[in-house]
Image (cartoon, rainbow, N blue to C red; front, side, top):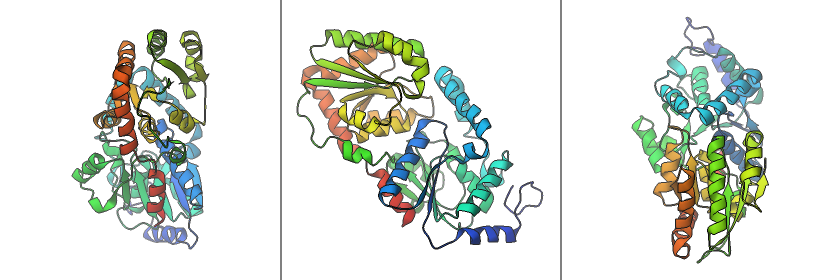
Length: 393
């Protein structure tokens, strides 16, 4: 094992080197590092939310740091593109890879497959000397375990697990530190894997603190005069085109006035032509935006993928959700969570999406009003602020 004082491993640290590293990190001025990786939007969204919380609390911090990208930019760019390609086009293959990670050895007792990452992380710690680290990506906990073993750390370390219930074992590192989770179900899973409850904080997902400011202050007791739907397509081209045709049918035939906003984000290049040719007349079409909190808070329903960030941001905005796709294994817990609390519905087929919206609007919107209320009651838009306070206290 690297950095665990075993002479038969390549990347070892002598005991005096480890002691020197710890001493170099300890200092008086408070500074927090927030580290993540660009494999899926949820990890980065959580990190950005925490950074915004630290900034609002005027706590010096690193901003969002992707150490994997910094150390190996070209390699990680290829990995990231590959991840998005596989999860979009061949989700069944990704499910097998995801399940493989359940049995893959990480951390202290495993062979160091990426010594340059371990060395780069160690160098980062020496140079920045953080008082606390918040990680929203599973690999970093294992690297810290590899560097410091299972003993005390010279900084406070919190791992923010961004998935609900379907939590991969890759999150469970052996380093000292604490864990933040979305809900009690997630906490119970950690406890079942031998992590003591004293090390676990139930914070919710750390969405941007802006959601606190933008979410509706008052809620309807009847359907709004104009029902606003936000669609964030990520699935394959055929599915998106079929969904837009069903939404065309909905807006034409519904007795309710319905408007549609479509945000393509990173899928702009792939979907722009399809969206512009198939979207209902009068739709608002957006490529990339930094205004998701405002758009969600102004919407009455969102159609999108069951990503950790997407689901939690919808709930924080009190915007019920129709889940039209999910990454097998990785996102199933998110979908189960929002449906179980009555704030969302799974509808994969385009015709099912249309009929679900019709059902929500039927009977004067009785079901939609119930979903809207559940979002408001059971969301945690203050989670990022709570997580920031845990890190610095």
